[in-house]
Structures are given as C-alpha cells and as structure tokens.
Image: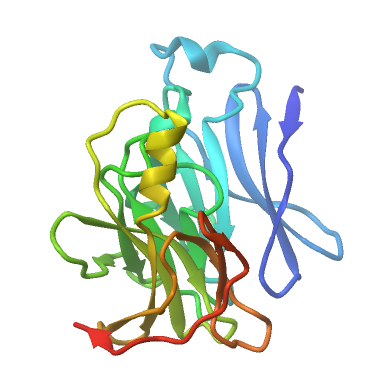
Length: 249
C-alpha cells in the first residue's frame, strides 16, 4: 500500500491532529487523537480517471488542510480536483463530521492570512479567486453551523483582507485597501498599494467597524495574548500599536 502524509494541524484545544494522506491514488482527510489511537477518515477525495494529474501515485495539492475548528465543529480544507496551480486560489470547504457532505464556503488563496478561526468557531475568509492581492478580495464572516458567509461591509472600490481574531474570539482586526487593476508585481506597484492600507476593527456580533489611527501602510495585524489593541507590520514600520477611531457602519 502506498501512503504519503502531510504535516498535521492541531485542534485549538490540543487534543486532536488533522492531516492529509494519499493511499491508492485517493486523498484522505484524517484526524487522530493527540494521545494516540486510530485515525478517523473525515473525507475521501473522488477519483476522476479523466483527470491526468490524478493518475500519479500522490497528488500533493488535491486536498489541503486549512484549519481545525474548536469544540469539534469541523474541519476546513481547500480542494482542487485537477491538482492545478494554486496561484489563483482554490475552493474552500467545511466538513462538520466524518463522512458528512462538505459545504463549499467560498474560494480563497491557499496560505496564511486567508482563513482565520476564532475561539468560538466563527471563521473569517478572504473570498476571491485571483492571484493578485489587490483584486477581488472580500472579507466574509462564516458560521460553523451553517457554513454560510456574510461579507464585511466596505466602501465601493475597497478590498478587505488580513483577518486576525482577538484572543476572546469576539473582535476581528482586518485591513482595508483600494482595489487596483495593476498586473504583474513590480516592486514600486507593490509598495504603493501596501502604503494605502489601513487597519480596522469589527466587534461581533455586529456590523460597525472602527479605523485604527496611524495605521496607514498596515498589514498582518497581530493581537497580544491579553487582547490589547493589535499591532501590525507595514510599509511605514513594524509592530505599531493603536486605538480605534469612531465607527463606520
């Protein structure tokens, strides 16, 4: 039997580890107790003989694990039946229990910063299938119960991205930036776009957002363990703290 596996992803409580394996050309999404025991298969990828990429012994990016939800609420994973280049993103799915039918929640780029899970199980995704960070990116809040997602409101022509939850799971920091039609990644284009970023705060449940003053050029917000206002890195510097301005609804 041919079996190849991926790195594991821990559950928030540290009691479980989810991982991807490939056996007999079938990709499996599995979970195992941290203290040992038998693994449980949550999802088996369908095999499509007409797709040449699925005939190789191990398809490395057919299924990619995104996150383990807390309180046994499910797993998030990206799926690409053609094992194509993931540069433009992949469909993101929620599966709530082993063997259940997966729910497609959106399409995102694969990697850090595009899916953020709170300690309550609510998760945020940066929805939008496009390799350019400055095109077709919308921050959405998603329910672990229904898998339905609601966009965070932003002015027309603005993108929302870089979600980061506070430690208590009730406040979301994110970045807002203007959309751009620019193609390619010349350094001046990238630098100019990042310099337009601003950092915003959303308290859930609710829709009012608050801008962090002095956050021009912010990216990758990070909360402290105590839940004090997030710091961020950006074009103008790194690890800069701030306090929220009045709301925009």
